[in-house]
Length: 118
Image 1: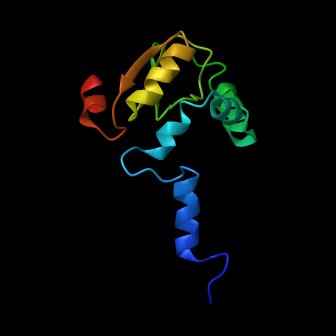
Image 2: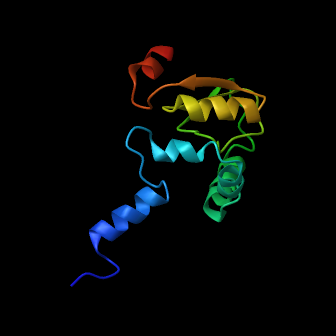
């Protein structure tokens, strides 16, 4: 019996609505959408984590901080002594345009380049 959950119908809908792209990472396509970025930056879970990090760092003043996996929405945005990092060049490029402070690096969180910096 074919119904709403028929895989061929779902795949056709995904291709029709551009949810599946064969050659591009569809998640990174969302970075280009200003509405997506605006909504993402006001999600409750994101704001809750951002407030918790800010509270933890209130009395801490390190020389330099590293935020791994910052993407387009970093958790620490009120300091200039921070290195924002992400595996996505596109995400870091967008972040660099929208946030005018800090340092930016494209790298994988488990990469040895972080270990060499210490």
